[in-house]
Length: 74
Length: 473
Image 1 (cartoon, rainbow over the protein chains, first blue to last red):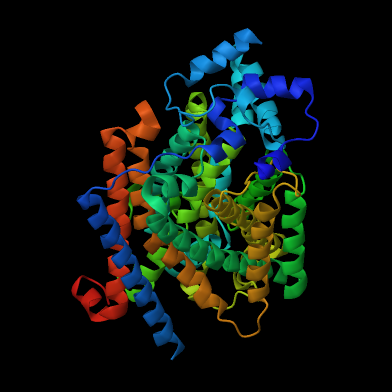
Image 2 (image 1 turned 135 degrees about the vertical axis):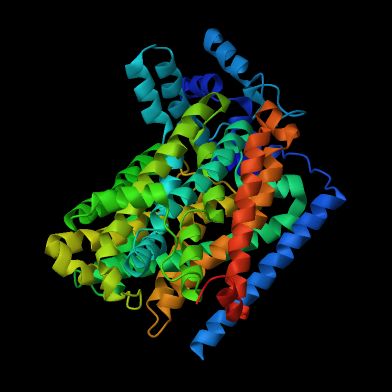
């Protein structure tokens, strides 16, 4: 809360407040975004398998890159 | 006021309410400096929309373009332009001109999804990944981004050093000068001003076009290359696979997803602006393609001279082009390399800072004064400073870093695309803006191409003899 107040503009002009209210959508306000998070979604088994497969692919391929650098250096 | 408020509320009807359960009116939340700046930008968009006619549409376009052009021209960065230069010099234009056009089409497909995500949720990419998939997967994604961004930033400073090296500027002065430019661009404390300044700087990416024209290009060969897509000279070799990956990595990389979505949220685009966001992305891709093709055409005359990208410090390409395009042409080429590194250093460090702010729940906006966005600006400047310092270490293998960075970018894309694919098909946050089936099919095709390229690279390193079996040398 303190941080939010610190971020609050010290002396907003009435015109500025009107502009904010009329021009921004409610979920565009920075404090609204900071306060409310999107709810966590539940991953299906298939999605978890996909995540892990691509993670393993990436780790393996980075290993290949490191191997190539090592080979070229030597 | 009430009429305008009604209009705004009507615009938001079809989109998901992410503040559900929270404030029902603006009056319940604290108004920040960031909100006021963004609201003024949105007010100009709203005012412009009230006037019909072509002039008004063009003004609207001027107000709404930015993230798409910046992300595409930002990705035409130092290593990308050096990769294109190496491609033209080593393989000519027959295969790679249409290949690069294809890679930018892939980039358009991917980046369009970030436009919809940013406009529909008003949130950055890192924030959505953390919120929807949890910190476990979120941190994996952040590690990929942080590592990739830092390595890429190093290559941007290599480009800055190489470009200014042509004019005899010592590396330390070049790097310090680039950091100073970065600092000055941020001191505007205003997204709109920063965006316009950076767009102006990014336009210099097109410096490669006059250089290409100075080489006296053979238009018939260029037309034939684009229409007929000739096979590779020499078949599939380890070198060619590396260049192939470097070219893909020059157009589609994870930082682009994070940057464009966060920039769209920071700019304040809404669902009503998606059409313009798409145009912004396609315009950026078209300009970036033009600059990329021009770079390859410019260095194609070196094709028969077996040039390599082995000496970046001496701005080898610009010097090699001297006898062909003259001093001014070579100077433009070197300046183009400097610009590519400089603009990308700005956009990439900002993408890191956005992601850090979103994950750490710290203020993250270019509309913030330094005092209110200390962590945002410090992450940005510290990352750039560390990358710049690394380039100055004597004896560091700059060439390997440049090549490896683009390769890593390609390898890191499939996991990043899976997050994007799932988010953009998430009806809970996207509402009716979820991807249609054909967009999903195209995204899966992009993932297939990227994984295939990665596997081909793996084979070329682990079992190079296998390449001979599939038509290489």
